[in-house]
Image 1 (cartoon, rainbow, N blue to C red):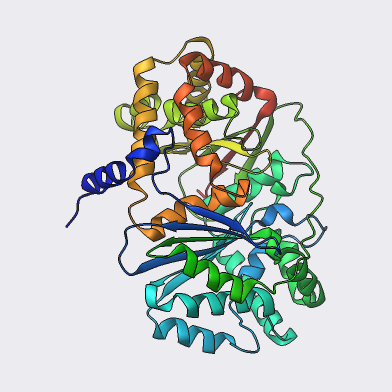
Image 2: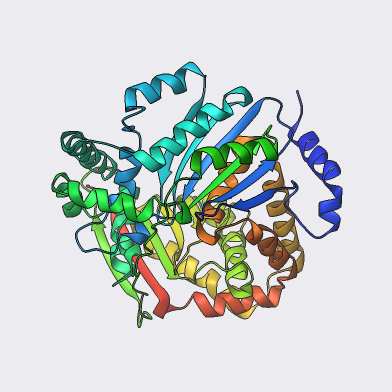
Length: 442
């Protein structure tokens, strides 16, 4: 069995010319845009007989700008499995099972993605099935209403998690007007009203499920010419019609926001501290430095984690979440605190750590070690078609292509300890901060 290190060496040696050219992404890839605006990214790679196929819709809960209609991006992920007149849902499911394919879908704030992993011999069948449902989705109102009920059931199940509850409250607290104010599944009142949204759902499909707003990301044992010919055959008649939403920018926050949340069940207290960041831009040194800062200050190898988790055993875990977002996202630090009386202590230790990074440059060795780990972790995650497409899908949704991968790691390379200090001074200040403490039933 090939080891992960062996796979990494194979990638680096086999793609040495790309690395020498300054590119971290190790595979050559082909990009082509059809006349109707559909972008196709093909990544041939050594994976005998295996293919991973992503349909990346550049729409997520961010795009739900109409009042009362939050949650429709996620809801539509469900509806896309209902099939078409040619291939109704059960028929499509039977075909997918018969060819031994595996797949699913997911929705987030900036993306809705559909994926299938299958054998090379079934490429044309998969292209036919996927192109059909993206162009010809069909469902009756009764089916729509049934699925809407299922989505509300999903919401009620999810909200029983203290992490889902605190995430919902944090978004509502941190944002005033931007659509990041609601979670991907939507506001509860909007979800409950979904069964009455049948006609609206059809307009949602016609606005967002258009070729200019979708990117096909296909990796594995593929021939570029053959694959492109099939895509043109099955997607070429897909009509344009994407209508971009008018997403209202979030105004500058003017002061710290705080809230307490009561959880009806039993749980350890959870402290979440969030700071508003910037829209993702791989060339923005301050933003990229902030992403590195999150791991340096609060990651598993950080001094604070060693202190609070290992030495003092004050927390069940300490974890940063510094995601890439199309618009102004949140940098968040989570801590599950073992005792209620230690919440303020843990909070103050987080603030103290931020202050230290703001006035004292991080050790250059620590910064370089983190850069190296990030780079090797990224490369090790590219050892199979499904892992390649999975890693790349969000970047494709946010930026529209793969160029940001090389741009991001090029920016990582030039970040200095002073840049980390500057980023900490810019983003991690009280006027950008929202704080929530969740406590369970006693």
